[in-house]
Image 1: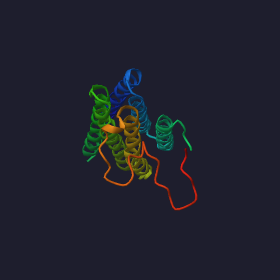
Image 2: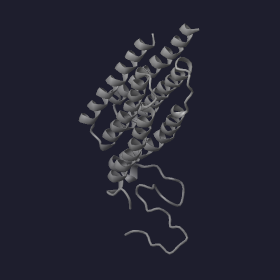
Image 3: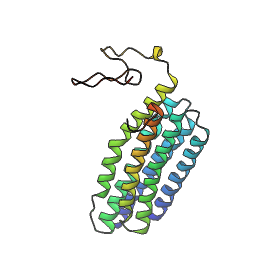
Image 4: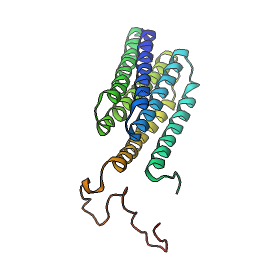
Length: 89
Length: 128
């Protein structure tokens, strides 16, 4: 039963990634693209942890922690760049 | 007992998948940027939280090992999601909303995206 639930969750988050790609391609504002990239990072963290459950290993927690940190920093850096034209003033 | 464990973990996985899908679908469906800000910052974060709970339960109940990494990731995501949402909203307000359309702050200083920050009590001069 867990296997099928895993397949369902994989499908949901994969479809979510496609939606985010659509928003990155068509988003009229910079803010839309930043938001879609941030959501992509969150979806990828979920996919990594699901893959960890599927393989039965805890190795992927470190990877998803790193992805979470890099994603947050890149979102803030992109926003700062659009807001002020510079990342560190 | 094993069936109950399976049902519990599957329930959290399916719930997480639905929340994640709703969040990403809202990003496509909603009309305005400020509306679109709602869907991913709340629903997708909850979806990841569901996945992490399912993973914790799986490794605790099936594999028999308790780990706190998931709690760390959850804490980090729940802390950073509002901050990045705030930054994205600021980006949008600065790019598309005129300063005259913003409501007054009701304080001595105006909106931080348009005005310089208040000077602290030292010798620094504001940037020109």
